[in-house]
Image 1 (cartoon, rainbow, N blue to C red):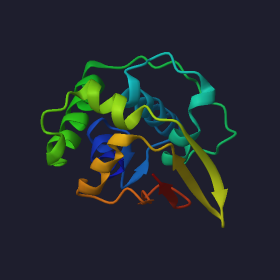
Image 2: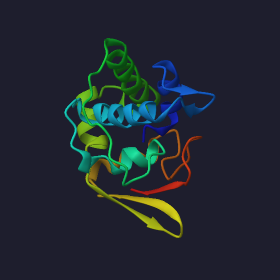
Image 3: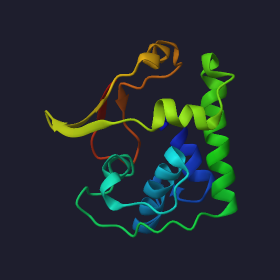
Image 4: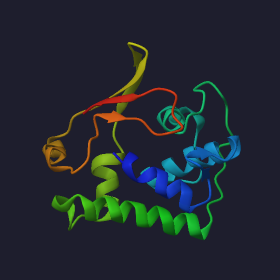
Length: 154
């Protein structure tokens, strides 16, 4: 859901150069920041990172350092990104960042491979009817640094 905003976000915080991560550490930090965007956490267990690793082009079985010491700039940019999502999705204009996180980012789902590409299947909720009004595609995700497309069934 956040994917259209990620390239600019990662450039702004200094993790991307020429649309690729500067190094492995930058990609790993990006994966941890994705979890921070989801739930404000800085203590992140490895087992909840598969989707973030896929979105950051990290090999799924590659262990990463999960300790995130977030900077004030990163914290501010996370807030800006989430606010931008809410502002650009006009039906959510009165939704708080925490409300948005709970409703759309903190969801159960399954990630698996289908036909050589990643597939994310998200559990449906009643308020998912709002997804019909999102002004960008959430069905197909392909970021410049990702090896494979991620298809999303919501």
